[in-house]
Length: 107
Image 1 (tube, rainbow, N blue to C red):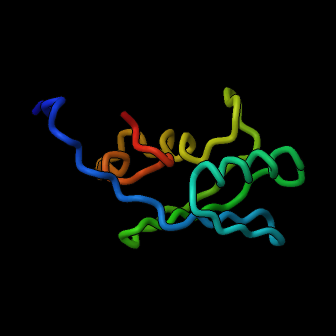
Image 2 (image 1 turned 90 degrees about the vertical axis):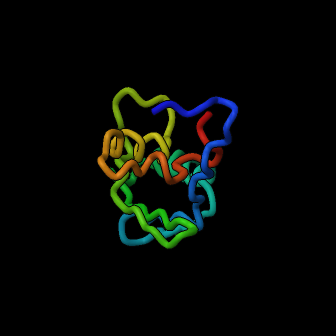
């Protein structure tokens, strides 16, 4: 099946909130991947933990959660979206086709 380039793609489900938790003492509730990446950069610079927990809640109620390692080889910057993409690429439910993992849709 081929999608004609002039036809609009279906919109992806957007993010309602991103909750991030570092160790037992810091929790943040954010509204975008850009804000999450800035927070991850600050937390990584502090070097006081090896990973943090995250939960992404989408506008349709779907939730995605996991752990984000603060130190990653082959990474020039902290990116929650890239982390999710790496771990979900090739999943049978086609999550990446239906849900945003960046603040702006991929071209």
